[in-house]
Amino acid sequence: MKTTFEWDDSKNADNQKKHGVSFNEAQSAFFDPKRIVAEDLAHSTSEKRYYCFGKVENGILTVRFTYRNNIIRIIGAGYWRKGKKIYEEKNKIYK
Image (cartoon, rainbow, N blue to C red; front, side):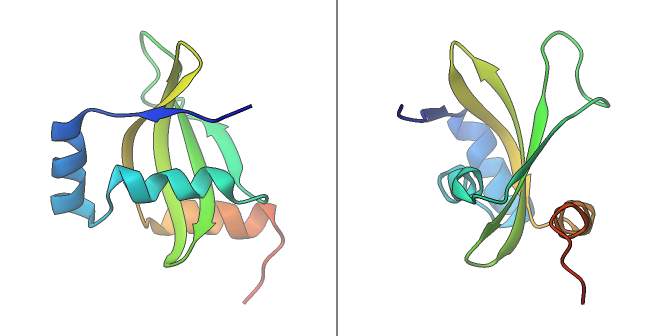
């Protein structure tokens, strides 16, 4: 089964300016076999939202997303310490 992604181009541009990560790059986090997916309880209102914590070339990336019509819609992405900590704890990575 092919994984399909979508996003709002203006949010993508804003995210690149604010966090230095494109949504095209953010897709890579979903292909980490050790990725962690968790529900975003703080921002879930009219639709369920989630976090994907996945290892990519530049580190551990946190991606906020939702599902719409079997498509992953990326909402935001960045290299955030909290996401890295969750990924490392769940995958038992110690430094």
